[in-house]
Amino acid sequence: MLFFPSHSPLRGFFGRRIPVLLLSFVALLPAAAIRAQTNSDATDPRTLQLYSEAKEAEARGDVPGAVEKYEAILQIAPRLGPAYNNLGALYLRQREYAKATAVLEKGLKVDPKMQSASALLGISLYEMREYDKARPRLEAAVRSNPKDDNAELFLANDLIKLGDFEPAAAHLQALAQRQPDNQEVWYLLGNVYKQLSMNALTKLNAIDPNSVLVHEVSGEIMESMKNFDGALVEFKKAVDMAPQQPGTHDRLGNAYWELLMWEPATREFRAELENDPYNCNAQWKIGDILLEQHLDPEQALSEVNKALDLCPSLTDARVDRARALQRLNRHEEAIPDLQAAEKASPEVANIHFLLSQSYRAVGRKQEAQAEMQLFSKLEESSRDASAERAKRLLQDRDNTAPNNQ
Image (cartoon, one colour):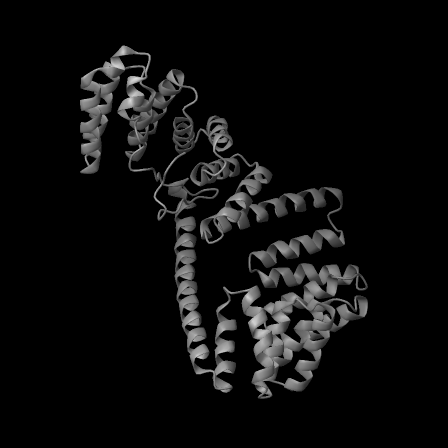
């Protein structure tokens, strides 16, 4: 298994580079294991002394000194596989990829079962943009240790570079399950899904470039990229072609809703309910719009109740029902919905804020304070994430500039 610093995010998608983030030291075999080597040179006291000196050099940050010691070890014990492994890791830290590749390949000839060296070789080849060659090495590392998150993330990026998006998505999904708070994994997964959507759109266009499905998928891709104006154009075309088909008005209404265009959004959601009376999303958003417009909270409550009758677990509708109840000064009734919403979506800051308001209104001051603390913490995390996304966008722009091609 490879051990990487847990605080160092791996970055990369399409045109962006992934920085080399390697372990500070891949543990050389302990003395007992060295003595077990078939090559008698491995038991030479000089090997053990050089190994100790290499460890000391790396501990004080002298990477070139550590490299020199491992090179000396290999002069004495050329069959000592872990020495190749460690030397390759140090070359990678110095971004000397050609040297790392050559050393790691030699090490794997000595010990083909050395999976850490296979993973490091895959990373080195990836950094050299030898994506085809990197793939089998990284796949072998992940097969050997399916929980090696770093090797799997490099493999996912390698598959993305090769345009093999379906297996990349599978690896990213596995990583997301093990690291649900890793924003980088979710970022990559979102981009892979976009690419898969675009691939699907290409196939749909090849079949019939003017079908309802083509306009719907085009609109959804634009919507996922926050291009709601472009999505409106595509969804309008879908509605014009199939005004009585369930889903067409809902998608158009949602684009209007995202753009805060309340009247046309309401019109489309009501048209959707004519086609599909069981569409709880359309029903909920009619009530949500009333709340956003600060109109009759009783009517908003009625509309949201209809949505919850259809879909009792619709968290957004529970939050809006609580908002309507709060505006009617029925805070005690609002609390159960907000508690359920908080349980379903603890990461949503606004739910904690609303719950704090209701707790305070009914005199539960300690609980109100606790919810406000959670709200503040989540808001701070959200601001940090927004700053990181902005930084990433700037990096993308810089990396796609002509002088970076």
